[in-house]
Length: 383
Image (tube, rainbow, N blue to C red; front, side):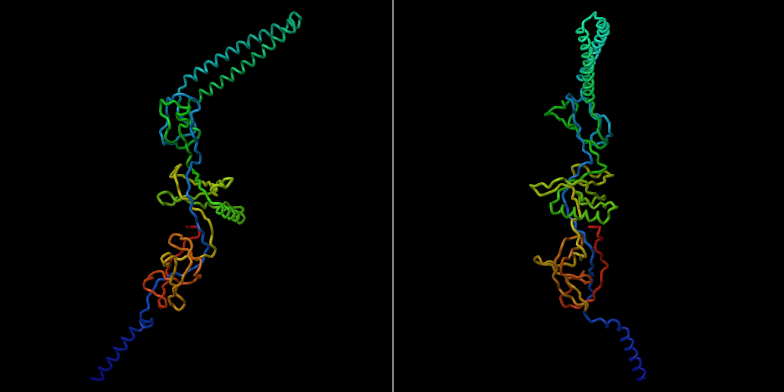
């Protein structure tokens, strides 16, 4: 009986040791610590500029003749088409002027007929020496003068009709029209009363103007030339983006369409104009937005998540796990922030592992069990 009890006890101890075997392979007290493994990539560095939105065309509507405004034929803030009637100005004075000019044309034509008839009578008599050459020359001169008078009267009539046409103000382009600056009954066409009645803007495409420094311009133009040399038969992709007033990123990218001819000597800034598609007409003239443009590229750069970095009195440090899974504290030099990542300019090499979580749980010299996290830096084309 005693022998049987000893055999059972021995078998139980063996089974217990066998069950505990896998846990004793790791040293006691070693923590599982998430880590991020560094890599290299070309990192585009973007800069932001304050830009203002303009319509692709912003056409001022002006009164080209003086008079009282008789009618407004559109709804403010609506879309208008090219040629639509917008305003009508009192036309009576101009109608009377046209009638007067028509009368002058008729009078001139009557005088022309008389001069032609006189010349037809005088010419045969002069050929028969019944009248002097002087009489013939006088008749010819009167006939030519009457023709010139008719031409002048007809020109004055055309001018009067043009002035009459200006009493009807039509839209020069298709677009969206703003708030009218004059009401029915206002005297328009002369200061101090409104001369610019309204503005029509084409906004299916908008223009955004912003300023860059001279150094930024030199870098960007050189980079653009390099892109052209590398892809001579390809159009450069749209690289500009907009951040709207509410912080949202505008869905359509833009391209630079105009660079001013000179740098402002007082500010050292250069005007840049970019165009952005605006099919939904979200953007309106006068809006302010931040223009995001690629300003530099860090080749073979390293980025790590922001949460890996500790800052104290302007110094930046990270915990690095070496090949022996031992933690070391290392100082790094940081660069720009790109969303949840930070560019590391110095202090880290590709393939090294930095502590991702649990910074309060580790200390230099501690042994850890590193667990690599599946966290990826941004795509080079993103910001």
